Length: 241
Ligand SMILES: [Zn+2]
Image: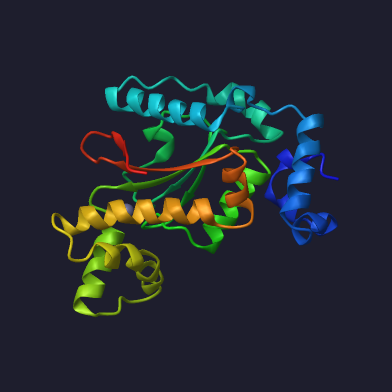
């Protein structure tokens, strides 16, 4: 039914393939299974277990921290990636310009499926994107990636404390981050650091338990969801979930 899944989201969502979407995850996953039988992944080295994917992220971050990042051959990998993608990890990161997951994990194109939103919380659109990565691209690992001194979390703390409404569409960020801020209010220590950590932990838990696709993949051992915090001064990512 779906022998060209590696071609991308537009293919999956095309009207002629609507059965994939309307039929739910079973059909989607069934289509993926057949796609795997007939099509070789463009990056065979990315077909790894969740544990190996995490190890690869950690090794990439170590190289980045040490300043010994690899030279990436962007020119010659373009052709292989023109036919599809099979990233070994998905990252739900803050939009902060200082984070840059591809740099932080010293990764090439086609390696990371990155969703970014200020405050790195899972909304409907990012959950849907991650469902696509897991069910269609067979990505075995999701990392929620927060960072030190997150402006979105800080703005949420101030908005709730002062009982003010931020301008424009910013209240939608506040609504997404507020549960973590409220959960740690009254805790000892740095309120911003506490909320940043809690926000990562909460969103890891949310992604793990989101039905039907992500929760099923976790139960089947096909997916791990972890959380890290990027340290601005060193570039090191500390695991917190
Ligand atoms: Zn941030």
